Image (cartoon, rainbow, N blue to C red; front, side, top):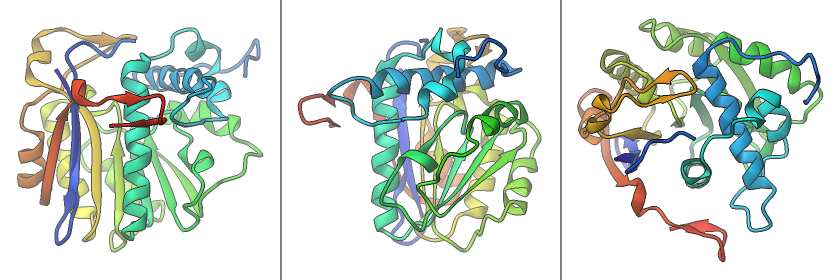
Length: 275
């Protein structure tokens, strides 16, 4: 199954979230527009296309005006499944807003893909956003954002690889990230693509960089998926566990955490929220 996992860091810390689901998560316009170069980056365009579909609904749970452009023709042709993207995105939005009210002033998007929270989320004027992902993602993404206005205080694109231990954390610090400031970490659609060793390194680095009051949210898949040979657009699932809460506690040093089976997350269209 798939899961949502959330957790908080030390003191009155919140938690790192993992969603568990019961089925696999498979799910501008210029003639010469640039394409991404890796399967992992392509899944980010698929996610943007899913956000586009949701944005066009009259009962949408969020709005992403840049989704059409960021998805590109290649992403719009193969949107990610809304059954995972809609609740995951809205949960992440709500998680961020909640922790902003608690004092978090930095957002780190691990495996940011073609996320546009820095442009679409109002009411977070002091937030500094750091997007961490592969170089090919930003080579395609940054030109598409030319002339767009930020909704937050600042945004930095951090090109790196999660498969080279320590590299992404060093690059994040070099981009201006302040480990003394409470931070929200969102790792949507990432951990299932990381090996156990790379996931453990990520947890360790996040823990070392997290001030009191920081919090993590991510989705993931349970251990049974390791033998299911799931692949999304050519990117295979190689990371899965039933112990994410304990891992964030023991490896990342987070004080509390919880995991929800994804099937327990309900989309309430009438009230335009998730329960």
